[in-house]
Image 1 (cartoon, rainbow, N blue to C red):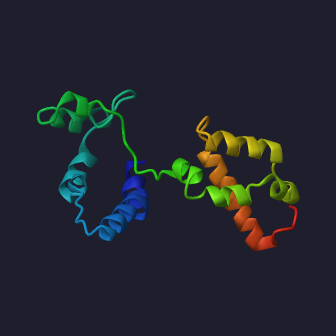
Image 2: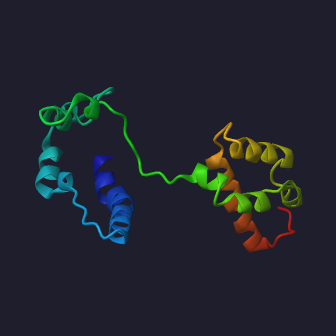
Length: 154
């Protein structure tokens, strides 16, 4: 799986995104842990020295504890997610209200309009985070509209 990550996920996804975003901000980004000498060394290290069921990056953490405070080493992973939930509540709210409106949901016939309306309301009020589900329905509806037209039922 590490080889698959190295050959596909990193260059085709993660590194491509980092490259695009850093160039957009005129930043020069380096990935020292992907230096060929580090990768070649780690390819020869036994699995149990890399990770266990409950610990990962064992060698890196052992080395890093010499230089970094404990609170940095023990904090959880932090991804590069977009603020989708906030966008659906603010900038994209007019689109959500239009595209996921009960009348439109009834017309298409894919989803229960009352349920979708409740999800939109709860998300807009900050009571629940339905950002992933609302985004999926929004994109599906826009795609179907483009493919089949606004009135067609599926």
